[in-house]
Length: 293
Ligand code: PAF
Picture 1: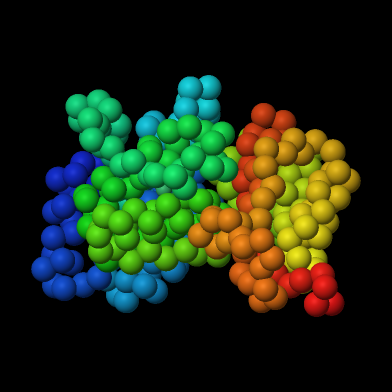
Picture 2 (picture 1 turned 120 degrees about the vertical axis):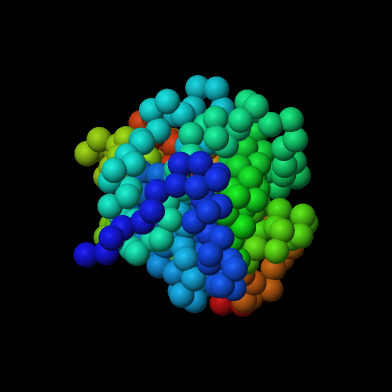
């Protein structure tokens, strides 16, 4: 049994805890989260530990009001600090940074925020205006407080991952950003803190997102149209999944060329409502061409 992580509630406590590591030249690994930790987060921590090469790993737990729109689930978002600390203890996390809203936003909403650019206007950004401005602003603030060498984000929130990478590149933040594989239940459902909102029937229906993505992956060798058709057929067979979008893009979320050559890498992304719960998922595709078959 490990002693468990040290809990820092303020920026000052966090800075004091990390100053020794920094002066010793050790790498700092970082996993930003909103808590309600599950095995998906645990896998991010494992990646961070590996990439930190023996240096400390920090997990932040902060439900960021800035990334929730009006009518979204900010108030009902699960807050489970005790259980989260246990997960962190099991995974050998060194520091948990769990600040209050006032600690992160002392003067209220910040005057200066990160403008996430055109990639934030599509997909999730189109449905959740302002979401990525809130995400990138808090990630930039957390990077400023933790000053990590490496930060790990889940591929499940793929658009978030692409945007964080873009921010780090465009603003020269000097943080290595690692995208960790999505962890799934045995029936394929991607782990998510929001899965706990699903009742038994909805939980079963929610696998429809994964089945659609898998159908796209299995038919991608025949091209984008066939892959999308196969995914849509899978969704038609699955009642209760109310589709927001299903798209195939290039890996950076840009448009694919009109007739992509065989071997082109792509990404299928899906978002849907099951009951009142909004779920997202995505998967890599390796495209072929129908006429090459
Ligand atoms: O992916 C999340 O949990 C959040 O969007 C993040 C990156 C912790 C920012 O609040």
